[in-house]
Each structure stands twice: as C-alpha cells, then as structure tokens.
Amino acid sequence: MADKKAQLIIEGAAPVELPILTGSVGPEVIDVRGLTSTGRFTFDPGFMSTASCESKITYIDGDKGILLHRGYPIEQLAEKSDYLETCYLLLNGELPNAEEKATFVSTVKNHTMVHEQLKTFFNGFRRDAHPMAVMCGVVGALSAFYHDSLDIKNPQHREISAIRLIAKMPTLAAMVYKYSMGQPMIYPRNDLSYAENFLHMMFNTPCEIKPISPVLAKAMDRIFVLHADHEQNASTSTVRLAGSSGANPFACIAAGIAALWGPAHGGANEAVLSMLDEIGDVSNIDKFIAKAKDKDDPFKLMGFGHRVYKNFDPRANVMKQTCDEVLAELGIQDPQLELAMKLDEIARNDPYFKERNLYPNVDFYSGIILKAIGIPTSMFTVIFALARTVGWISHWKEMLSSPYKIGRPRQLYTGYDQRDYPPLESRN
Image 1 (cartoon, rainbow, N blue to C red):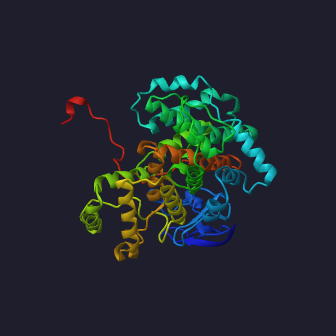
Image 2 (cartoon, rainbow, N blue to C red):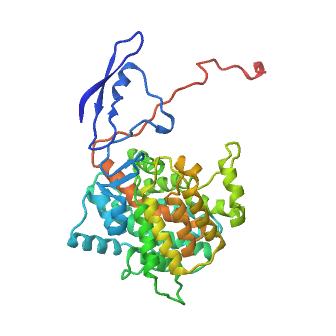
Image 3 (tube, rainbow, N blue to C red):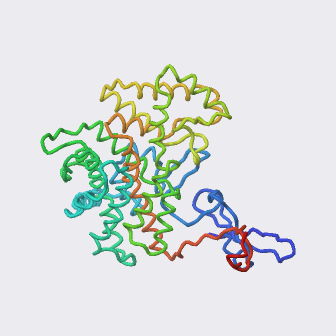
C-alpha cells in the first residue's frame, strides 16, 4: 500500500511525485510508473534495484540470511515438512491439513506417467546430448500431448497443468538420464514417495529392482525442498515474462529451464564439481586457496558466497547436515568428496573467507550429495529444474490470477541517430 510519496526533482521540469509502496515485510518500493508521462525511464541493468512484480510467495532478506515460503522459514520446512507438502504451500498459500495433503499427494501420484508416445520423442536427440538440452525439448513438447488444459484464463486448467508438471518432471528427468545411459526407461511407481519414486526411476532396471535407502530418499526430498523456490531469480523472472505474453504453461517452464541452464544460475553445483576436478588433490588445496585470495588470479572458489545472501545461506546448514548423513550412510571413500570436506573446513575457519562472508552455500553441498548418491554431474541442473518447477508454476499462477501486463522492458539507446541509406557504390 502507498502511504507516503517520494518527489523526483528534474532540472528544468516540474517535480514528479512517486508513491512509496510498503509490503508486509522488506524494504519500501518507489513506484516509478508515473515517470512514463514525463517521457523518462529508469535505468537499472541486472534489475539490481527494481521490483518487477508484487508477490505473496517467497521473501528473502539477504543481509539477515532469511528465506521464507509463505511466511515459513526454510529451515523449518526442510526439517519438518516434505517436498509435496511444500509444493501445496507454495501453490495454495497455506499448509494443508491431513485430508488436503492426502488428496494432493494422491492427485500428484496419479499424474506421474507421461504419454507413451513421448518416449519416441527422445529418439530425435543424440545419446550424448546434454541432459538440459533434452529437458528443454521434452518439457516444451508436453503442450503437444496435453493440449486439453492450455486455456490460461481457466483456473481449473491452470491447476491441472500445475499438477501435471510437478508430477511428470521426475519421470521426465529420469527418462533423460536413462536415454543418455542407453538403459530402458523405468515406469513410475505410485506406492513410493515422490523422492523414492525418482530414485527408483533413476537407478533401477527391469532386471534388478533394488530397495531405496530411506536416508538417500530423505536427502533427495530435502534437496527438492531447498530448491523449490527462490523469489524473482533469473529463471523465475523468465517464466513470468514468458507467461505475460499468454504462452502456455509448458512453454513457460521450458523457458525457465533454458534460463536455469546458465552456469551463473542453475549450473553452480555443477561448477563446484568442476572446480574440485581442477584442484585435483588435497595436497593442492593450499595452492588454490592462495589463488582464490589473489585478486589478479582468475580462479574462483565455486559454491562459496551468494549474490543475495550477504552473511550466510539459510539453506546451507540444513544441506551440510544432510551431506553428513548421506556420506555416513554410504561410507564412501572418494578423494573428491574428501577434498570438498577439507575445503569446507578451511573456508569456514580461514579469517580471509570469514571476513568476506565467503561461506559454503547450498550449491556446494548439493553437488557433493548428488555425486555421492551416484547422479552424474551433467544431471545436476536437471534435478534443480525438477525441484524449481513448483516455484515457477506458483509464480506463473499468481501472475495470471491478478491483472497483469505483458512484460516490456525499455532501454537506454546509444546507437546511431536517424541517417540516410547510401548507395552501394558510394560506401568506402
């Protein structure tokens, strides 16, 4: 709500009054829409100081290390909730009661299968294609298989599409992995939990069905919870922008996947493993720590610090606990994992990193956990997309349920002014 105003003084022009909007929590926001009448725009590359929308879903206070989903701290959700309950919360605004949760879980499980003909779609991709390339294609193609619920103005259609996406993403992700491995695709099992089902489809084969470790299933579910939503990040903003054009939900989520694919966004946990490969051995840590401290050296510690969180990532401590549980369960003796734990210990105690708040973030630990479970590095971002789908579709639904305009950023033009077209023979 606007309860006070800011005044913009422009030399040679009348002052412009701009409403100051106050949210339920967080900084005040200056509403600059009135600038349009003056023929002027704001200039904010990277949207560092621009609120692109109003939302009730997720709140982040980076200075204090706070992440809230519908008001609930992420630490409490990661410890006490599970992924499908968190999905319900993000989609509907409140935690479900027992009956509502049972109905929601049952509905999601009833949509886990994908159209059988979709399997042939995979044959158009090379076996060595990056899993995210395949994921972009198959998710976008869902609109060709489920076109009975694409009326974005129909609330029921929006709900059906949301359920379908949440339910089918684990199936599609596992299919992408199995295709890359040359193994038969495994059908989902509705008697398993969401995380158990995903691990079942990833690692079982028709000739050998192994029970799913409860510790690994819990870890997988927690990774899903911790990545479910993160406010107006690049991929979520992409989904909203695509959705503002009236695009169908499957196309919007495919656009989000494409944005997430970028190494500066969803590829961060993959970059952690690449960094560990570069370091190579525990004996090299001191050398690379020195490189990280050298401002003239291009080497960077991946998985440390965060653009939003200035003191600590509230998801990281939960993820570290999960990491410890997984490594203890599997009893893995992996030089790369030992290297990661040593790097974690040094960074947490070295004054250089402590003073600069270069703490291990959620990507650092999630990469280690996924590697320990047996998931290849190329699949890390696919799993991120799987988990983030509920955040994307929640923001998409929220936008469509209120009046909105197609996104149309403006620009500061610095090219040529109008000029005449010269004949070819007169050009130098």
